[in-house]
Length: 245
Image 1 (tube, rainbow, N blue to C red):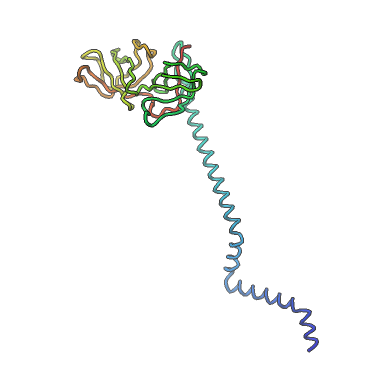
Image 2: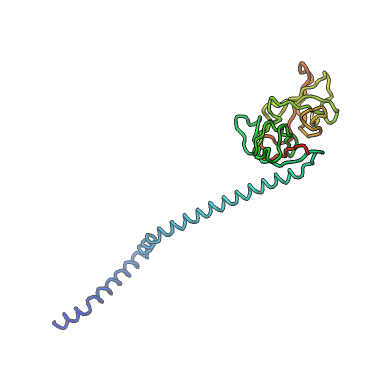
């Protein structure tokens, strides 16, 4: 008996440890490892969650960079199109971004990111791919404000390219303008194109404006036509400012 007590004293820890291992092994076998898996999930949970957050941040940054690249490519295409526009004689061309545009006067005015320090002056003509946009009405050292051709107060002398008839085009706060003639029976047809007139005092002649989409020869006191502007004035982002060379 004394020998057993002495043996137990020396081997108690080892026996308890062995019994514990056997018990855990039996539990894992009985539960098919579910308990251990859940335990590992609890331990790894914070690290896994942190990894997912890092991946989400990386995905968001990648998407933002892709969107930025697409925006730069679009701006590059706009600038390339501007560079391909023909230059009028004795006119210097200044590429300028649209800096600001108010929703309240979207069709009336816009602000450019170029001003007097860049050579922009009052009454400089503003064009974009497609044709006339408007003219500069005021300047600061670094910005300039443009009165759009679509503004109801804008009046532009025009020439019908086919018949060489002349008239006055007025904006009406949309992509369409109203064309008034000086004679009772003007030679005007749907799809006729119009350009700035040689009689215009504000614009050089020959700048494309748009095409006729409707004619009303019975309009009083003079015949009228509706003209669709050829330049995308409603969503233009870059323009060319034409100044004296």
